[in-house]
Structures are given as C-alpha cells and as structure tokens.
Length: 211
Image (cartoon, rainbow, N blue to C red; front, side):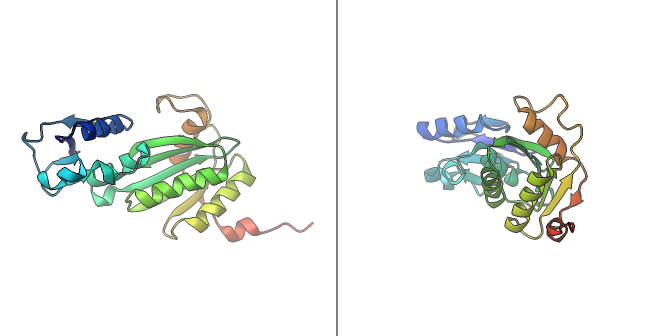
C-alpha cells in the first residue's frame, strides 16, 4: 500500500495532523517539507495553505472529517484501487447496538450506539463521507423486531445498490481474539459482517399472519 507522508512547516497543523492520525489504524511518516517525496507512491498530508507545494496527490487536513473512523476511510480511499473500495458493515442489534466497519478488506473501526436513530445517523455519515464502490450491510437476527426495524430504516435510507442482509448471529457473542479494545457488541458485529445472510425484503417483513 502507498505511504502517508506528513509534510508541513506549520507547527499547529503538524500537531493537529499527527494527533488525528494516531486515532486511526493508519501508518504514516513525518518528513521535512523540503525533504524527498515519491509522488508516485506517497500520499502527502499537509495544511490547506501548503496544498500546492507537494504535487497533485496531496490532502489538506482541514478537508478531512473530524471523526477518526470517517477520516481513515477518506484517506484509505486515496490509497487503494477503486475496485477495492468495498464498504462492509456488521450490526449487532440490542439495547446497545454494536457496529463494525470494514473497508477494502481491512478493519476501519467500530462503535456502539444507544439508539436506532444514532446508529442510522452514524452509518449514513460514513456512507456519505467515505467514497466506496460497493456497500454491504449485515444485521444480526438475534432480536427479530429490532433487526427488521433496522433493516427497514436502512433499506429506505441507503442507495438501492446497497445490499442489506439479515444474518444468523448464533455464536457471534462468544469470546475471541481481534479488535483490540472493542466491546462485546462490537466484536459480535464484526463476526456478523463476515457471515452470509438473506437479503432483506420490505414486502416480506410487512406481511402479517392472520389471527
């Protein structure tokens, strides 16, 4: 993968860039603004006022979202080929709703929402701000009512090209390695994201069994 290089003469901008990058999973190097750069393989992160100093593939920290997860996705979209910009989301419904997000085959981040509305808003922010080629959302079926509600809301809010699936989540809450620092619901969401599910159908969900 290409390398992120931090290059700026502005001390405040440098502190801002580095402190924000440390909240992501991205690797980066700091270089002097007048140091050597490989414009074919490096992505330069700098301040907006220095944007024109380092060639074409340069990003201003001011143009990136403040949310670390979203910012990481925005930078990754510049580092991977367009055909690999797959956005994969796993959701573990419950009183605390876990969500795990993967991008281009790698973990982007995870979060826990305390309400369906907060979860939908968080996901729509990611979808809107992170460039992607495909979008697949997997929702655990452990709480059927919550699962159908989430699936229905997301099916209405997301582009028609997005895939929304209901997934058997048995065994996803078992202890396991990976996702350092993640909560139980976030780890379950990560496992749900990588399981095969059934496409959600609003028509099937709205059917009622006669009394």
